[in-house]
Length: 153
Image (cartoon, rainbow, N blue to C red; front, side):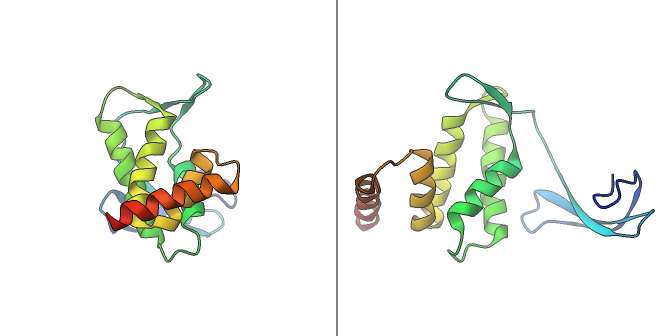
C-alpha cells in the first residue's frame, strides 16, 4: 500500500480488525520509509457498479462520494459516522446483489432517501432538497409538510 505522506510503495500492517458493522477490515499501517501511520479499509466488492446518470453518462460507483453526500445531509444532527457507514454499506450491498452492474442514479437516490427517512427527518429533508432540486421555499414547505403528515399517520 502506497504511503499517502511520502508515496513510498511499502507499508507494514501494525493492527488489523473488523469494523463495527463487520462489513470491512480496518488496518493500521506504518510506512517503511518515513514511519508515518495511516489507516486503510478493505471491503468485499461483489461486482463493479456503474452509475447511469440522467443525462445518459456512465460513471463508476464511488462509495466515498455517497458517504460525503449523506454526511452533508446529516451534519449537526447527532448521527455518527458509524451509522452513516452502516447506511452506505447497506445501500451498496443492495445495489451489488440486484440486477446487473449498471444502476440508475435515481435508484441510488431513492435508497438514500429511504435510509435517511428512517434515520432522521431533517437529514432526509436536506438530502431531498438537493436530490429533488428544490428551487423555492414552497418546495421545502410542501415536502416537509408531507414528511410531518407521514410521521403522524
